[in-house]
Amino acid sequence: MNIVMNEMEQAEDEFAQKAMVEAVENQIADGHPREAGMVMMALTKNGLDHDEALEKMADVLAVHVAATMEDETPFDINAYARDLLQLAKG
Image 1 (cartoon, one colour):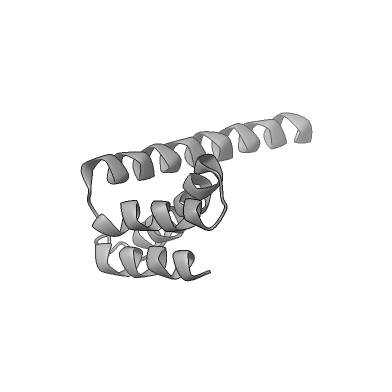
Image 2 (image 1 turned 120 degrees about the vertical axis):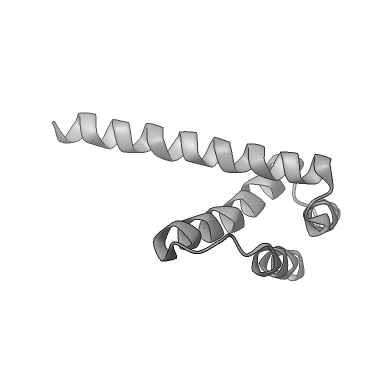
């Protein structure tokens, strides 16, 4: 039973990560927040490949989405953008 539960949790984690990556890709394409594109350029300029940069940015987004859900508050785009910029300063 534990093996099945672990596999389910892993599948859920992978699905959530893919959803976050897709959301970041959409943000870059849409130019909103504008920091998403800027940070992508900075991360790739600093040596990360595109997929690695997307994953790091998706991790930042996931933290903000989780906080929004946990606190039952609106998504704070300004805080998210600020944290993306911190990622670029790394």
